[in-house]
Image (cartoon, rainbow, N blue to C red; front, side, top):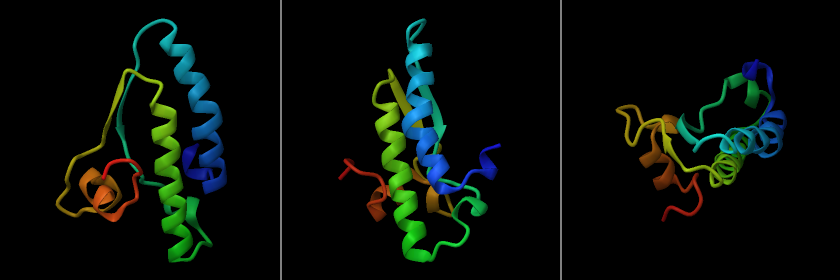
Length: 102
């Protein structure tokens, strides 16, 4: 289902739906979010140029951090990957794509 969402729908889900789900779960037990990243299906970014794709992924990362702040903790997919890119926390920090980690 997520593969069919465009970036605006991903942002809405991350900022509106996800916090409600996390809050609901947190009423019963501590919540730790695991294995998230800035990776999106290419169809979610279809029609965007390189600058728009970067801005969209930066916004998506910021939205996820905002949503996950209310949890007991979170961890990114991988600190460092051989290929780098959106699956690599280190690369996203170095690029400045994740706010507040410099």
